[in-house]
Image 1 (cartoon, one colour):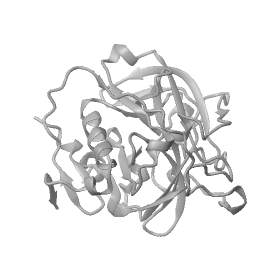
Image 2 (cartoon, one colour; image 1 turned 135 degrees about the horizontal axis):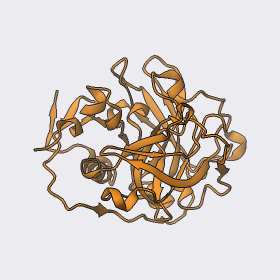
Image 3 (cartoon, helix red, strand yellow; image 1 turned 180 degrees about the vertical axis):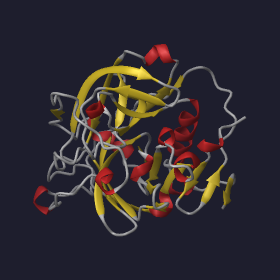
Image 4 (cartoon, one colour; image 1 turned 90 degrees about the vertical axis):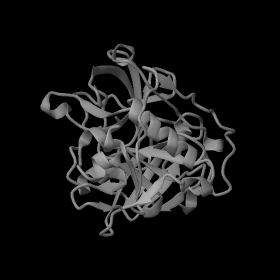
Length: 301
């Protein structure tokens, strides 16, 4: 029987019932490098005047990400190059008008995956108002342009929308663009525990303490649970929604979401298990064309 917590919900109040998943013990999609063609929407450096913004976590009741002992983060110097180009800075406007920043990653031509709390506030039970998506941003340079997306194109799942359960803290943003064909996009995968536990990983994103610049760190998986992956990769508020990839595969195994290092634990992300994989695959398909977002299997609630 399908896990109803994985039923997909969008900002229009439509629900897609999660199908029973009888897939194999593992599955994966391959990363796509993209054409690298810079967008006509790209903005000249002198036109960008982004203000310093707080992290989305600091505006919500969310366990903030943390640096684990020494800060070993490294700056990405060429964000126009794949796979850094497929990582997106998110400028998020909440329902009350406040702004914060987060991270997302392209999983297909027009779909950005992120943390659930980057699209929906589980405390106020309100969707965020809008999100500006900026692939490969680096300070005043936006090589692939920016895309403003409103509530009706946000997705998450019942486990986050209805329950605020951190194990279901993931979501998606459907763009009215296929910029992922230019930037490239990540693959994603689910695997048995022993395939990923204690294995090398890489996380990247846009921490709020490094305004508008992309940073990454490599490490290993500390622990794997049914719906969470734990690691001591240095992050800060704003990293939420960023990809955690297995080794050098450019295939995402979890979506970074929470801190924990300050309490002698680990930072963590929402694991891409079989059900998450199925939903991300559907969202990827919805971003292939603007018309693909709505389907016959949706019901209004």
